[in-house]
Image (tube, rainbow, N blue to C red; front, side):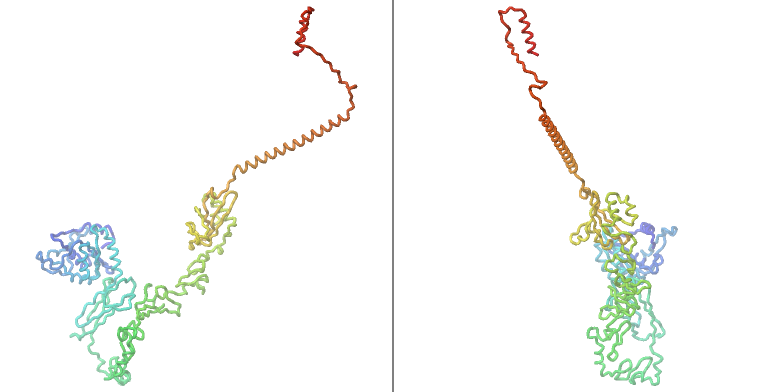
Length: 635
């Protein structure tokens, strides 16, 4: 045995495999040697001993050895021999009696597996499952699982089978002793009825399982001084409960009758050896009852709610009154002190917190209310309001919450207070930050705008240094409307374990509309801004150039027209004044035609251009005259 997986792998690879000529396998020889060779295998004393047995065929069992003239029965002893002792890391052991001893029988395997508390997991192929299930019914604490042909599910088989073994608790049947009659009954955890089965399923570590033995001596042994031993064992634990049986066939006090002892037995019997030996016609612990009325008295011991007989078979009827056995109580011994919840490791949380009153199977714990204990959800007495009070305070949850089974639930909005006793404030009102969680707060606005226009890493001065954390999201929800219309963005403001009272803000600067949520982050104990990422097309408003150009041009044109109009008006007024002045001057003038110094008389000259003179006129120079005249006309 080793926890070193490499050594385990080497051991498996180094295993010497033997074969035979028939189909059945000799695995039961190996199972026998594993059970009886405890020292060689190396089991720890307190270990849970589990063996994995894999096979794809039927096993050889006792009497199969006759086929090869092996007649010696298996002696259930260890016969392992070290055949490679030189290397301590690669020790190989071999079974030496395979040719001289027969295979073990199922009865022999049952005996050694019980004796050595070994449990077996049979991982077999589908064609062999039915056979091994029949074998499983004869062997103690065994499990059968179906193994795939390629063994691919072996790990799953080991895990699931081990869990089943761990959740099952079984007593081994006490070995009978000659002369003693042994009866048993078992009360499993969580059960309200006793069973003669020695197996309890779904039992966890720490839970209580009760076994009761009724031992009756049929006769006195020949040697009255002998001591017989009865052992109570289980395959799941290594502990052994030992019962020593001594025989006292005759008490020495029987010959001694105390004087005046009849008064101890209602004067109807003798007090011998600690008990009353009643006179004829009387019965009871103190011979206080007349046997003629015993039948009527027995009615008083019969529980009308139960068919289990007098005192529910958990006590004896003594003159109409039930005398209950150990761990039972009640008028009819109907209540048991076992079977109540014990998830905490102790019944009802422990004797100081409550007691078990399992009446008619109700499995109810009665808590010690005087010390403040009350039931938890599992029915145990583990809740106490004192656990919700901090040291030096008598206020439950510091006055800021309610106590729910020793655990504080902080009041109203759980984000105001935290801690085991709701004594640590995590709300901004308790914080010394000089920040007002409103859209008008200048610090929050500056941080949000910085993150909106720049990278978060560039805003350390206005954000992180001011104890403001930020996160940029593609969309930011208006949290008070999320219950009506949920969107993916709402998840950032509906998580009450992380956020508190979100404030939705939309702040407009010179160009863009910045949208963000203001939250208080209780774990960071600071403000936390969820800022919508910038989308210029949706968030920002830019001026159209025409809006600027057209008014400008219109203004220039209007100004020019006004200037021209003013100039025209001024020019017209000037011309009017000058004309008026001229008219006035004309009116003042006294000139006449006779004395106008620039007046000249007009002269009229008539010349016929076509006239060239008289042909008959031979006077010289006439041609010259015409030429001169022509030049004058041209000029």
